[in-house]
Image (cartoon, rainbow, N blue to C red; front, side, top):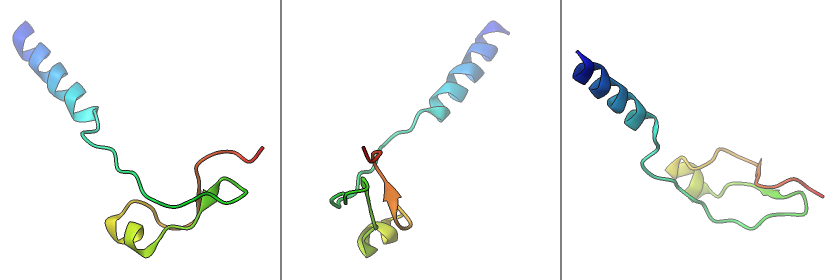
Length: 56
């Protein structure tokens, strides 16, 4: 029974770990964000204007 519980726990934890991270190109404006390119939208990397850092 302990092996079954351990196996379920391991599978659950592994399922929660992202297997890859995708970056997208684009320079940041003075507000620390930018609009997504059509190419990035097509890949599903972003949907519109978004921020990467806070404006200081």
